[in-house]
Length: 319
Ligand code: F6P
Image (spheres, rainbow, N blue to C red):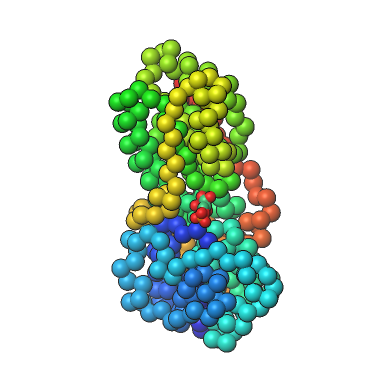
């Protein structure tokens, strides 16, 4: 293998730039030519491909977003779109591809692998929802962003003795909400992986009040419902007045944490190693503190049920 390429796809996540840097520098270290594909799979179809040097990825390890830009690309879901993409790769003599992104991006990488083109996926999404890896790039940074927001909201909640609802991203997954809720000392955390009972939320709030609690913070993952919907439910059911903060895309931006930068460096390098070793059609990941690679297909096979011990603990600690 002499020439590989790297792209970022789907929602951006802090640490993507650090991963691009790792792929490029590790590739060059191993004697490869490395190209950058701009604007994700759409850019691949359109041939937006340029060689990258070690210097061209300097001064990006600390930056959020992605220097290669990103997109969500419906055309790549079609066979025709993927054929055009493969033509672009082959015309340039590119023999392997590193895809940095979330599960939608991994589906694309799996399709290319099935078509015989060597691909490796690097998991990057604030949602932490990729089967097979304990952590995805961007999760730690987004977690710290949410914790920071909760801490600030708590100041107002305390000063005004209010109940606050904080709506957290995560698509269909509750990791970001759960971890942030535990770290932020939230009274109630609603995640899609667990059913909730409005009556129970109301009685917990009431019990807290009876014990002299002056304020409460409820975290709701967007995959359960919107913060405004929960606020309306609490008002209609029990006359409880709340304020709602929807954190939105601030959770996706910002300088990556040290942990995400290190993880990105290790993931990016491992992706290149996997391509060079001929282990195509794999995703890299972290399991029990070790960097691994495993078949991309495992990402979509349903996977092991997540350990939700942290959810049970959150209930015990928020009495
Ligand atoms: O997957 C990352 C994520 O931020 C989700 O948490 C969220 O549901 C979604 O992307 C938002 O997507 P968009 O930026 O396209 O609105």
